[in-house]
View 1: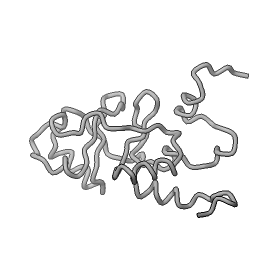
View 2: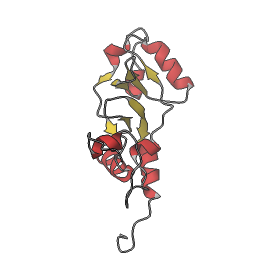
View 3: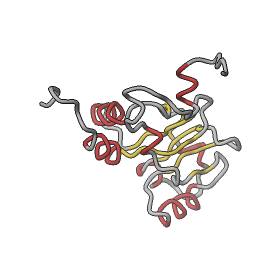
Length: 151
């Protein structure tokens, strides 16, 4: 027996196993894409843009040397001057979401707020992956609703 003193949310954020009726439901970390391109503050936009596009992406997460999320480049930012440093063009301090958020909740939130993608991070801000709204919606649509809850 181990007394985990940090609390339930910290346990969930660490991706540790859970029990109960919701344990089998997909969460943000289950659907987020871990292969999202990353870059650093001192990188040049032109080099990053080329790398991002050649990998088939239209977004890049800006991280520090510890993989902590600092910013986000979406399609609009990737179109800028090739010589600019990432720190000059990124969206600083993007909204991030924890690994344990239910995918149905993420899909609804992303749709309501017109978010194309959202970084998923650990409790200490380290990048787990980028959740695409289309992936969240697709995954949420596959969830079986309990009898009596059909609409």
